[in-house]
Length: 259
Image (tube, rainbow, N blue to C red):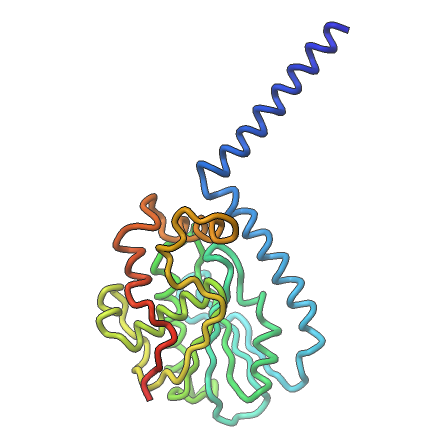
């Protein structure tokens, strides 16, 4: 009986230590919460795609995994109605908290969007921790340049471009739009615009985090997003420092674009 009690106490101690280590890991490191967020995004993407599948109309043609650069993540999908009519272009940057998500997770939504008379492109980009800021912004610009350079092959209008994104993708899209329309901002980030300002006709920014500095010390969902941003920026100074300020120095994502 005494031996049994001793084993029970040892087991209880091991469990207590394990719980303390897990809780400590969530407090001291962004990685546990980032991993949970990544798993949640993957599950949500799969459910969304399954729900939208029956709404994809007939007659949409999609080209998958076209390389716009030399990196393993630098690929895009192009969807459009069948035919060779010249159509406006929508470039969509997927969300995923900078650490997850993929163009495959929004593929059916983009096909439905294309059925309204657009060439719609889902852009894949490198996520953290494999890459840090401003790599995703640079990659989206590279994708836009590739599409414009091949506008005849895709039967798209290079002077009627809409840049769009959701969540983290909206933040990346907003920065890309600013690089295109604001020379001072482009210089501060160190990235050249992919197109002329007049080629960008609109920006659609859904649920983006545009002031990254406001996430410091946040709780709940905002706190989880702050952990993702910490991994993206790759430095312990988040949310302070010049690199982070660069992403919010021009917090005007809804200002009118050039006519």
